[in-house]
Image (cartoon, rainbow, N blue to C red; front, top):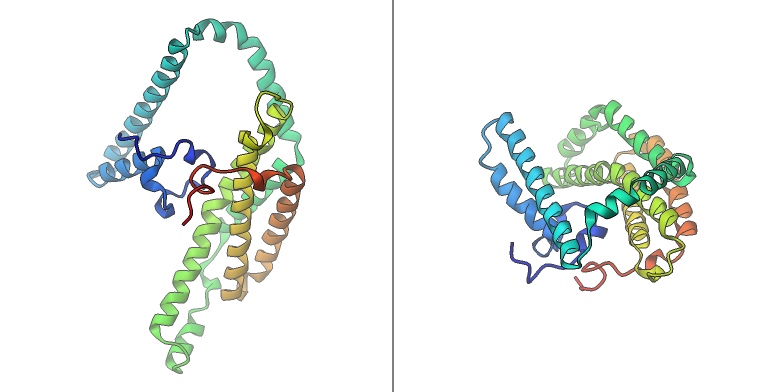
Length: 262
């Protein structure tokens, strides 16, 4: 893979929606994704697809392991010795972090939103879109076929945003909050460059986009207004909580997204 044009670390604070990203050709993960998509075109059945996924994951893991080992070797560090010495301390730290995450109200709020949206998706019936309304509007000449198709495309887009971000919000809030718990007292790294702050900034972006999608969707489909209000209340509470917990998140500079103008 050519690396001259890649933006270092850009994938650490993105929304993982490679298909919609303007930096897909300048991101190591985006380039790998495109290579996977090309290979996927040759897949003929489910077994071949499973093998492709397994091989890709194995290759990525091997590359990551090799990179980490090389980094330690170049610095003369005995990784095996460190792992052996630090195992007990790591295990204690892992258990403490898991206990913290289980009890943290912000993480629980994000999970609540995720689970509620997933259940809503599972029980949602396409009948909440009233086809008779569109047929009548077309027959009366109120709206053209193009206008109706455009509205359906908008509905599909807002649903895609809600669906794509609902699980990501939960995982990214977890990462930001647990990262803060682990690193808040680290004096060796400036706060405005700490990973948890960049992740918190990304959470704010995901939440804002989800709020806008719910509002826009409920305007186009009034039948879901009651559900939308519930989800908006959860998102707005989460938004306020994250801003209180990470007041400096907006000051974090994300590679690429905050350094290169559109």
